[in-house]
Each structure stands twice: as C-alpha cells, then as structure tokens.
Image (cartoon, rainbow over all chains, first blue to last red; front, side, top):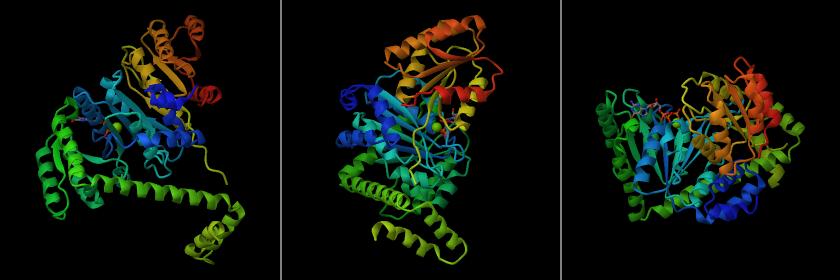
Amino acid sequence: MENIVERFLGGDRRALARVISRIENETPEGREYLREIYPRSGRAHTVGITGSAGAGKSTLTGALAAELRRREKTVGIIGVDPSSPFTHGAILGDRIRMQDLALDPGVFVRSMAGRGALGGLAPAINDVVATVEAFGFDYVLVETVGAGQDEVEIAGTTMTTVLVNNPGTGDDIQAMKAGILEIADVLVVNKADHPGADTLVSQLQGLLNLSPKDMRRPAIVKTVSTRGEGMDELIDAVADHRNYLETEGLLEGHRAKNARHQVLSIARAILLQRIQASTPDEQLDELVRRVGQRELDPHSAAEELANIVSG
Amino acid sequence: MTAPARTKIRVLIAKPGLDGHDRGAKVVARALRDAGCEVIYTGIRQTPEMIAEAALQEDVDVVGLSILSGAHLELFPRVVEELKKRDVDDVLLFCGGIIPDDDTKQLEDLGFQAVFRPGTDTREIVQFVYDNARVS
Ligand SMILES: Nc1nc2c(ncn2[C@@H]2O[C@H](COP(=O)(O)OP(=O)(O)OP(=O)(O)O)[C@@H](O)[C@H]2O)c(=O)[nH]1
Ligand SMILES: [Mg+2]
C-alpha cells in the first residue's frame, strides 16, 4: 500500500476505511496519520444523535442523511454500539437501517464498537470523528446509545447534539432525572406515529420552561423516521443551532471547551499508563492489599503511586 | 504492565439474495461476538454491491456469507468480483448455508476458505476465523 495518507487526501474511500482502523486501534501509524490529517478536520457540521436503545436513532440517522443528500450534501456516518463487557466483542447493527444509502458515493458509513471498559463511548471516538471530517464530508453524523454519561460525552465531541425521545416510554422523566435535557440542542420526538407524541411534546415544553432563562431553548421536532417525515424540520433545527453558535460568536468557545476536555482526558490516560508501566505488579498488589486491610486509605495509596512518576 | 491490545477481528456477516431467513447468520454473528470479534451485521437481502461496499467501508478482516436459497453459484462469484473491483482483496472469505457438497470445489476456487453446512458447531467457525483471519 503506497502512501495511504496521500490516497486519503485524494478521496480514496478504501484509504479512509484503513486509516480509521489504524486510528481506532491506537497504533503508532494511526497516531502518525492523525497528526497529518488533523489540520483538515473541523470543517464539517458534526451532529451527535443520541437516545435510549431502540429509540430509532439509526433509522433517523439514515433518513436525515437521505434528506441531506437530496440537498446535495455529503455525509459521513459513525454508528457506535456497545461492546460486551465480558467478551469485548460486539454486534454492530446500525447499518441495517441505512440500506438506502448503501451504494451512495456521497455517503460513508462506519460502525464502531464502544470498546470501553464500562460499555461507554469508544476511547478513539474523537479521533475517528476528526478523521471522517478531514476526508471532506459536509456533515458527520455520530449515533451513540445514551446511558446518561455517554450522552454527555457525545455532546463534547460534536457541534450539535440531537436527543431522540419516544412517546409513551417515560423517556422525558428519565432525561430530567439524569440532567440530560441540558445537553440537547435539538429534541426529537421520534415514532410520532405512535400515540402520545403530542403529550410528550408538551411535557418536554414544560420541562424546558423550568430551565434557566439565559439558556438557549432547544427546538422540539416530531419525526416518523421510518417514513422520512420531519426531516426538513430537523435539518432546519440543526442548522439553526449552528447559526446560533456562529452569530453569537460561540463556535470558538465551543471548540475550545471540547479541545480542553479532550487534551486533559488524553493526558490523564497517559499519566495512568505511565504509573502502571513504572509500578511493578507486586508493588501495586501490596498497596492494594494494605488498602483492603484498612492499613492505608485509598487516597494515600494513590498519592504514593502518583509520586512514582512525578517524584 | 503492558497496554491491552486494542486490535479486534472485524467480521462482516451478510446475507446475499432474496431468502429472508437469517437465523443461521445471527447465530454465527453471536458466536463470533462471544468469542471477542466485532461483527458487522447488515441484515437480509443484500446485493453483491452492497456487501462489497460494506466490507470496504467497515475495513473488515473477514467476510462470511450465508445463503439458503440455492443461488450461491450465481451470487458468490459476483460478490468476489465486486470486492476485487474495490481492491478489497485481503479479506478472509467463508460461507455457510444450504450448499451441496459438489459445489465446494468451485467455491474454494473462488477464494472461499471454508464452507459450513447447517448443524456445524459454531466453535468450529470461531476456530476457523481465529486461525485464518489476517488482522490488518
Ligand atoms: N413506528 C415507528 N417505528 C420506528 C420509527 N423509527 C424507528 N422505528 C423502528 O424502531 C425500531 C428500532 O429502530 P432503530 O433505528 O434500529 O433504533 P436505534 O435507536 O438505532 O436502536 P439501537 O441502535 O439498537 O439502540 C425499528 O424496528 C424501527 O423500524 C418511527 O418513526 N416510527
Ligand atoms: Mg442503532
């Protein structure tokens, strides 16, 4: 394989697919590729699509992408499904709902496993989003299953966050409990062909009325993704959010905030790795044993570990 | 202490053709997931073009085709051709389903390294994948 980055930059989709793998696997080559292509990222409108399992996120992502294609926009899609915490394997099935886009040269769909110890978001998600962006798509849609924390995390990865709800599931109450509503830039009531859609819309409006006055009020959009209904309104709402960030001069701040979060969490991982690499297993076992026996408190033990690299 | 290896075997399980029974394909997908693979499952009624395009975009190491309709000698060569067209020439190919013994040779010549028939122990399929996948 000759220079893969050159092929990537020349628009070769196989090169894109291979570069994603290297970056996802966190190989040294992957790091090198990311360094070369990173300056080209940051130009797409990145949209996170999150919500509970089975809410219709993939169907909605497919329908949204189809409407964007009608408007002659190119679309990269990343579908994240959880890995099994036991076997670390995964079944990635988001493509099933995106068949209509399968052969469209303006669309690229990549499935990604969570690979996180807690079944959360893939550690390399930011890098993969940047890679797909750098390839030159107008939009990058990122589907993730929300389990509270992941929804908040995806909001730190993308420019606009769409939270998908369903009528009659009590999702709204859950959302309020978890404080998830705050991260939503657009609220979707999907499966609006089911009973209770209007009730859910007014419940969501009620909840939004309780939010602080200075917070931007997210749009609420009703959709029937299986029939492509509501996609025009959804695209408008997503575009409105970007316009809002731009006209209020918030885009830079939004990017800086995400970048800070990313840099700090990578630094944290590097430090942890260094600590683990420079601590013999016996030493760690001994420390942990002492904490277990209540001879030492966990904070002092952790400090002792940290001092090994910084001291 | 070393960092855990992040690389995973990525497998595409696809059903070409018109038959709508994907129980077998799902059983294989789950067995591979339980063995630690990342399995992309695309559902029923896939055209050869769709299968090859999914293999490309997902950068899989392995493609497994499942078929019950009897159209394998018509469809599988087209899948192989579509993969070649896209330069996806380094994947491990296997297939399963209702496939007469007489057709094995022809499928092997096409590049399928194993043909599994109904009733195969999924452990055999998992073993085959782990023994032969070229993880890129
Ligand atoms: N009636 C109705 N069904 C829908 C709608 N949108 C999606 N569905 C159905 O809901 C089911 C789940 O859809 P998916 O798109 O796979 O949902 P998902 O949120 O991506 O699911 P996971 O990725 O597994 O969490 C499928 O059977 C869809 O056909 C809708 O607007 N109306
Ligand atoms: Mg999905």
